[in-house]
Amino acid sequence: DAGVTQSPTHLIKTRGQHVTLRCSPISGHKSVSWYQQVLGQGPQFIFQYYEKEERGRGNFPDRFSARQFPNYSSELNVNALLLGDSALYLCASSLVSLETQYFGPGTRLLVL
Amino acid sequence: KNEVEQSPQNLTAQEGEFITINCSYSVGISALHWLQQHPGGGIVSLFMLSSGKKKHGRLIATINIQEKHSSLHITASHPRDSAVYICAVRNTGNQFYFGTGTSLTVIP
Image 1 (cartoon, each protein chain N blue to C red):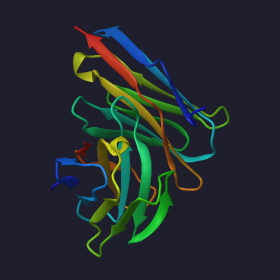
Image 2: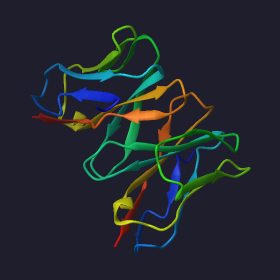
Image 3: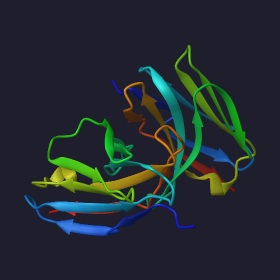
Image 4: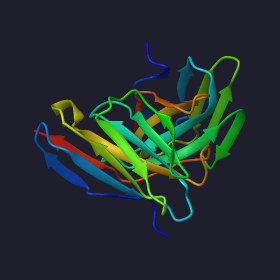
């Protein structure tokens, strides 16, 4: 069975643009979480969705938004990109909200 | 001050040595996670703990809720254990906080 998949794997944008990152959880998993990892630092929690509802939100500006679809896949949207948004964006899924998380390979975003 | 503090930041060990990585946290938690991140970014979840101790192969994780402290132990370390080990906690408000990681290098 496939693990968590994310697309695209790499992305280059310029300041002010908008980006959409996608995540497909492991089949049967209903919870998806998003994390940002800046080079050399630990991940930072952005959002958690469970059963298509937001269940947790980290300390990120409103430029960051997400949603979960009926098939439990998820999108992370970032508007008005800043240089500091350059990072590895990780998605993780779990069967239910408070279970062990399984991480995807991440999307590397570079903002120029 | 970070909600999650790990020590040491960097660790070099000889193959076969017993390794301990420590994690202290300052928030009330519902669960603590130990993660392993290899070069290139791939993250593997090693343990999820809310109390006591868990063992998986050569890895052991313990947590002391009263002291807000957890340890990850690796017995008979091997070069393939070289990675960054990250402690993360989920607080009672369903937010995650991550430590900055411990970079482990095991030398043959």
